[in-house]
Length: 571
Image (cartoon, rainbow, N blue to C red; front, side, top):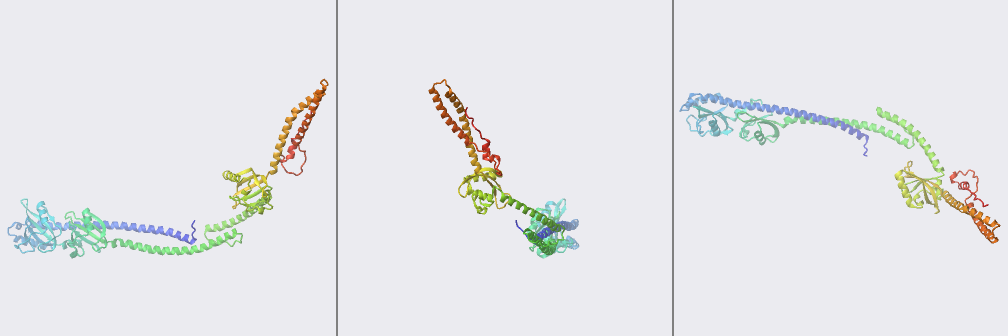
């Protein structure tokens, strides 16, 4: 587990508190900026829409002026000179008109104010617009075209002259791009915002800035692409000078010219950037101040904690405990109080533990049974004198570091015993054969369990020497067998002796028979004597063994005397 200093922890806590707050502040600023940007885009789009309507209104004014000229009777005269003067007065009235022309449906100019009346004239500019006017019988407006007479870019507004329901001629008013630029200027375009009017083919008609340079030039690719896709939109793209800008455009409903308003991105994103810079500077200053205060507090706090830890170590090692530091925090003050109580409780428990260990050690050393602590590999790490005596050693210290497995008469028995201990937790009173240091085999009663009291040992083993008990058990088995055999032989032998005695003492029998009966009786008496001697082997005289301390079942003499029987003598 990674451990970090307290000061680092406090600094981390400060960062964990301040960084999310700064993140929330940044998100709030960004959200407010986005909301402001959306409002700006909507306002910019609304302004572009208003300017588009104003452009159509300017063209409608021109159409109305042309419509006033169509009602004059001089328009139908064979000599257009009279109408020439009327058209000139109309141009003077509409100052934004560059010229007025009268065109045949074929496109041939009949009159143009840029030339004296009756002068030869080239074909009219914007023949396509004239053709649409003839076909539809309605007013039309051209894209930006170049006048064949003046050589300047211009916009033609055409109006059909209807006679008997047919288009007799087409009246044309030519507007200079400056007329549309003036309309943009009249639209209160704010400083820093560039207004642009683009015709249906993406050619710039007029702008609020640099009219001479931009008029007749293609609009930006992004502007043209967006204008083809939708009637109005707001988008961010590169301005003609390469800088990032936001553009809102709206297409005029009648002329289909697109009016765009372009705002430098700095004007939109600058406030956000400045706010973020100010927030970052304030955040860094606040973070530095907080980290400095946290470092100072952490240094003081860590010093007191080190003194507190020194008190813990001193108490744990039994040294004199120094004065505990004073904490002004309620929780840490409670810690020092709890430490004092814990020290008192621990001291009492330590004393009790030492007393318990002393009692255990005394019991361990004085136990009549052999006891030892071993590791998993069999190394003996501790034992008492009784175990040393059982294994044939003079002192308990001589047994240490020996391997208890070397004393098993059958090595596999230890492996089997440990498997049972691991499975059941302990094995109690298991009869095993051990080989003493001198090579003599002995019988022991072994109890093995997992060690729970010593971190240096894995198993606790208790051994009781039962070699004499095993020998007594074997002797008792032999005695019982002999006693049973004596009883089995003595019963029929008694009957035989009785019968032989009758034959030996019967006077009615011949002397030779009685003699033979006497000889047989004597032989049977010798057998009876042998049976009596066998029975004596099973008897042990009763005695009182003062202070023997042995259980009755282990006292072979007492048990044997209790089983003593005397076979009956034959009559």
